[in-house]
Length: 284
Image (cartoon, rainbow, N blue to C red; front, side, top):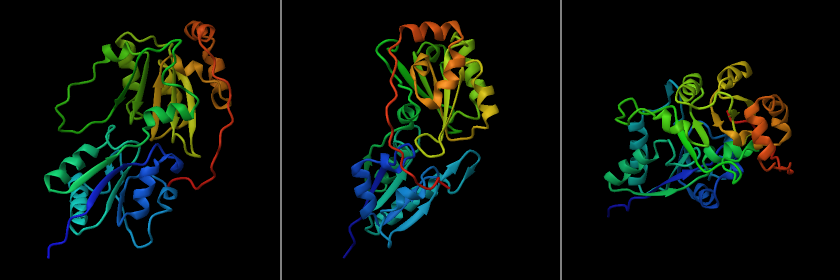
């Protein structure tokens, strides 16, 4: 008798804090036979996985891939064909600037059921963790998200920086190594170099650090602070709306610019709110 194939679940793990995975994602982790996970996920999120489960680390970082994408696809398909429940645990949301859709296509082409479980993307959670809203009714009618990385064989057109410069809020993912070029391209396309900007390193984790500057100086500020990936960068007047203790010192310097003075004068201020902090080990 042929064994019925299992199912592959593409689960979004959220931005870093293990408490930000969805309820559905947590349930699937607890009953998974196999968990294939990314680099940016700390061990705490795997605490509820069954002891008998196979756990496979396939994390990627710039210039270093633990396993080629084709090999990862093969792992998922092979385990599912054995009738196992496979969770492919991916940082953020599986379909936001990751390889989730490639894995989804590979499973479907092999006749394996593949279910997508959305997650909280760092494009929104990263700014929020630093007290920065990506939108506000007083000054924002649009926001966009870009990545500085793409497949080498991609046929995608180059980024349209003229269009991006016109967005009220721009969030940049996986852009730390190209931050200087991106910032300069936005300025060249017409974005005010004095507009506030912020970088959030290891957002939502105990390793989180925030650096505030202007678009024209954010790359230099990130270098000076020694920020390393993962970093979420936010460009826009919304950075000046943040009023948390973590950002106040940097914002005081920014308010010296005329652009930020106008923003602070007209914008609704966001009051401090108590935050619950969960003590845990830093991701390895």
